[in-house]
Image 1: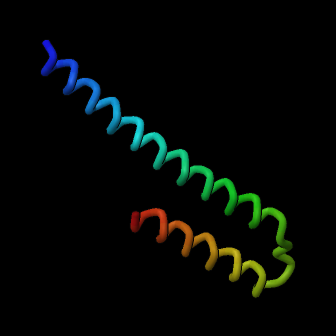
Image 2 (image 1 turned 120 degrees about the vertical axis):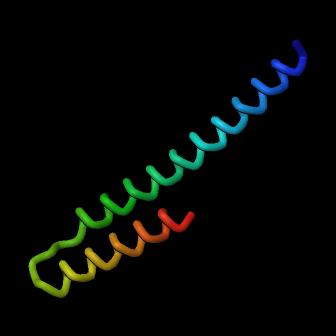
Image 3 (image 1 turned 120 degrees about the horizontal axis):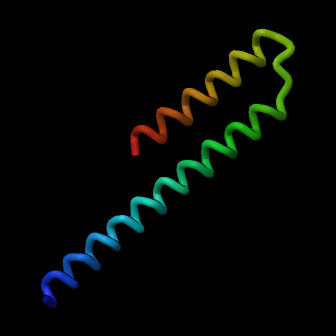
Length: 64
């Protein structure tokens, strides 16, 4: 019985760690979206810079 309890607690700890990592990534994505929305994309250079920042953030998140 104690083995089952210990295993369950270990899985719960792992799940909480994963949820925390997902929440952190979601915060980063939301921050990126907010910063991109604030900048005007009236010219092609501004739009290109937005895409570069989005791509870099996505690559960073996927690399984790």
